[in-house]
Length: 292
Image (cartoon, rainbow, N blue to C red; front, side, top):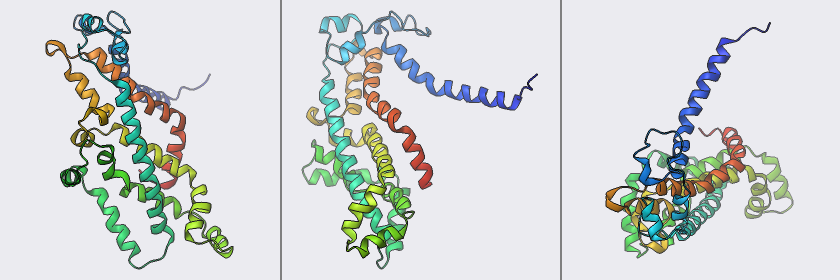
């Protein structure tokens, strides 16, 4: 008879409990999104959708008439979901492309090039990781305003477009691990630093670069405060900001919880798919570079 390992059973029980606590808010979001907003108050403790309906998703996608939306407790206002989705894609893509490209250049300079004061400059640069972002928000806002870039895509992406200390530190850790003999062989063949970087180092760094791109894209996609400050106009408003506006469009001060949860699910769906497809690579690269 097999001996029961109570320690392992307890470990699985704790793991199951942690997963339940972690996933329950996501389930509650799904349950609420499939409910009728007007019936939610009567079935607040029900674990299943209250008066099941797809009306919240139809409202978010703009497929419901005003009368249908109001009948299910929704808003009489309209939400241009596809415009906000496009804006989020534009902002996240520009930020990711710029940050990964310029961050890789800076990381290579700190990792492989020899120049006076390199380590001191890198230490000073990485020290910026300890500065809370809120401290730089006001100076950045004043600068963007003086440049006349409020309510523009450039104004939203500019503070994070070039590079961040995290991006440089993350890629530098990997570049330091590349065998120097590979670059020396390239130089013997006549390749300079630029050609070595683009033809040798970058192809060897596809995994960490993809990881950084995913992390940057997720961070940019979820950013709320900065786009709220500089991108209030509807033509540049991103999804995270639009969700706040959607919540404010409520009849008689009662939030359209079903519509809000449906919109939240739509907003999170691209990131969930991205992480489901490439999550394993992200975890492996983070473990390799030693970033916690």
